[in-house]
Length: 390
Image (tube, rainbow, N blue to C red; front, side, top):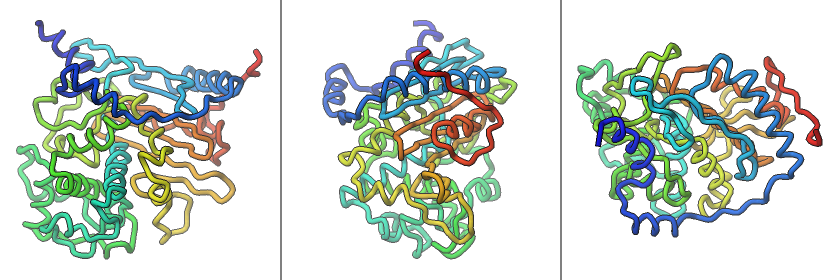
């Protein structure tokens, strides 16, 4: 088998099923949660398809788009595009099953894993993190504080630069060890302020490992990916995968090399597709996957120290306006990977744009959101629907 074909196999096959043989894969498929939602109105779908296509052609793809773009309602795909390259150096095409690193959008899945463990009564949202990580050096930080970015923990990107040689590839336990060894101070008293901080989700991944007794990549597979049939989603787990995953590029398509922070997960390192993110979104509407009481806690703002319309729930960003339905979303950015996941829950619309080539337009989908939901965003790129009868 030549190297090029091997890479193709890895990119488009192995990660869809892990290391399961044909029999075990059948067993996994039997356990996938079957979620049924009503089909969208035909006229609505036709109109929405035209608008999404107009937005893609007139904005997102100008001058070029490399990644996945999707619009869906009730879990049904209305419009979908997957274009470009997974690897420019090896000329590997990106298909709709090619996983892309979605950076901080990973936090949505990490949060859901925690909440599913809460539902199983293995985690208490209001318990001290020390309950699950005895060596965790901050007694007053709760699991809920990590989820809502109200812990006061410092950004690991800052103190890893200061206290390491940047040569060793760090893992989550290394981050906890640094917090302990150097007695790094909190930014503020827990649950007194909001500060978005990746360290929170690094700690949550360690909590998940401790509670489940398995690695975070495996725990996410069991708790989330296999349950929802996300066959093209995985957590990056070791350096041997670096050369086989979809690569990351600058706006000028310069390869972005992996660095010493690229094996840290929970806050990032989920590789997935737009269609798999839609399955994740669909799962949040089903009580068997996410009980209603926990759904309400997830999609609720927790930070009101400052007046404004932006807030954060449990692993989800939100835009709150009394005159509008609340918009829930999460962005992601790591190296050249950029993404936007929006879940418009009052009308079950999901919009996803993710790219492995740095492109700020990927997070500029507000005109499209505005069209469907009349959010108060400035429409720089107006998309006009046509009559669905046309």
